[in-house]
Image (cartoon, rainbow, N blue to C red; front, side, top):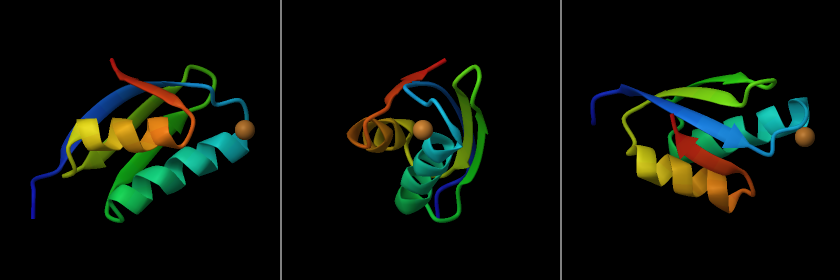
Length: 70
Ligand SMILES: [Cu+2]
C-alpha cells in the first residue's frame, strides 16, 4: 500500500455542512482509509492519503467543486 502523505487543497464551492459531507464522501470513495479535515469558511481541505493528489483533485472536481493544491 502506498505511503500516506498530507495533501493540502483549496476547494471552492462549499457553502454548507452538506457540501463538507459531500466532499468527504468523494474523498473516502477514492480512498476509504483517507483522513479528511475540512474548514468550511476558508475552503481549506487537508487529506491524509496514499492516493495521488491529482486523482483526489479530479474526483472532487467531478463532484462539482473546484479543487486546487495550496
Ligand atoms: Cu452545501
